[in-house]
Length: 71
Length: 103
Image (tube, rainbow over the protein chains, first blue to last red):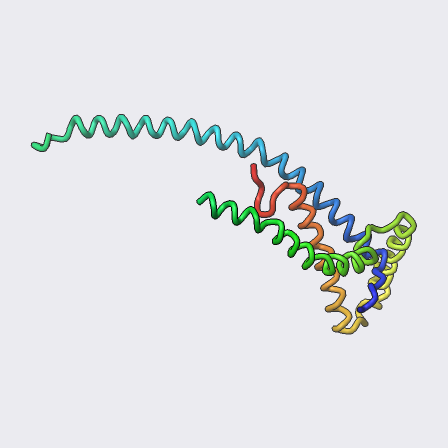
C-alpha cells in the first residue's frame, strides 16, 4: 500500500479552520432566516384566509346572480 | 404478511454480519490513511502554517509565483478547491441539513 503522505501544516490548518468557519456561518444564517420564514408563513396564512373569504363571497354572488333554468 | 415480516426479521442478523465483514477492511484502510492525513493540526504546527502562508505572500511579492509550472498551478488549484469544499461541508453541518435551510 502507498504510505500515507505528510500533509503540509498550512493545508491542515486551512481545512479545519474552513470547516469551523462553515459551521459558524451555517448556524448564523439559519438563525437569521428562521424568524423571517415564520413571519412569511404567518402573513401567508392571513392572506390565504382573506383570499378564501373573497372567493366565497364571489361564488355566492355569482350563484345568486346567475339565471339558468337548471336550478 | 406476518410470515413475510418474520422471514425478513430473521434475515437481518445475516445482513448486518455481511455488512460488517464487508466494511471492516475498508474502514481499516480508511483509518490507516486518515489518522495521518486528516487529523487537525496540533498546536505546534500552527506557527508553521502561518510561516507557510507568509512564504506564499512573499513569493507573490517577489514574482516567484509567476514561475510555477502549469502542472504545479493545476495541482495547487485542486488543493485550494478541496479546502474550499470543507467550508461548504461545515455549512451543511451548521444549518442541520444537506440541501437548503429547513426554516
